Length: 442
Image (cartoon, rainbow, N blue to C red; front, top):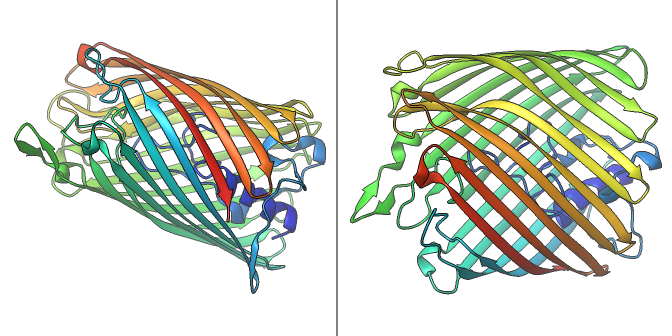
């Protein structure tokens, strides 16, 4: 991996730990400095530094990708690897701890987040490892305390020029956020284990570009105490398999139309009524307009079949649409617009799944070389499938700033607002959070 690409990975993972930049990430949250990228199923999607191909002209680099020689952290050299250890300490105020429509409770939270990133420094092939913890302690309600842990590894073997195979894997120990559509609302947050494995093949020689991917995910939910009893987490335990193929044709260096198809299987351990399989097919185009604006948009069809679900809607058919636009308005301002529509899992009574349709816009501005400002805005519509008729609408917005003090020290201040409307009155809420944190590159 060249040094520029490698540094791009360290920015994404060492400085902006929870930033998710993988193409498979859902476009339902801000992709930027402060938003993070939790998936609808509560897992965390990390960037994939070993696949970063940062060969674009300098004018095409986003604000986050700009090199900052006076403020970039210095890695610890370990043989042919570079190590980036970081420690973040933070304090936050949450205005609606239990995300309830009434009787809101406010609390202060302290956060400790150790981060370790390891990147190979090889002329060919690549390996990256990310490990981080996320411990949160509540001032007034210690039952809400939780500890997240993420281990993620990615490797790439270069067979020849523009031809490689990759493997990835990881494990996450997580607490499901109470803002999740699937939150059980127990006495304490629901905890789960999430494991993943995947492999990819890419062949980009000539005008035809081919990629093949396979991903496996395992979800294990713990029982959650509630009203003197427990909420059974095993009904959510499942295995998910997804295979995908993509063929693109490079009309020019700046234009590449493509077709993509995938097939998935979702099998529950003890909840056969929610077993399903499905597919999607889309056509899209990737385009680069002068190295300043890049576009990836697609449209097609998706279906998901819940053959054993009793009553309600079993066979789901819907348009599949989505895309992303990266626009460098000026050399100091970047804009990212995203949209997506997917079928997500739920075990809420009466429903087997829901369509989530939405998008986000994130604006990042470099006020000074060492001061970054960011704002984001997003919306999602949730249309539930089953015997009921529930629909939700979710909004979020946020603003924040990062001050790079020197190579070893930075600090953040940001504010987020969330609002959900629902045909189920008990699911509605609004929530304000303010957080300050300081990060030290060790």
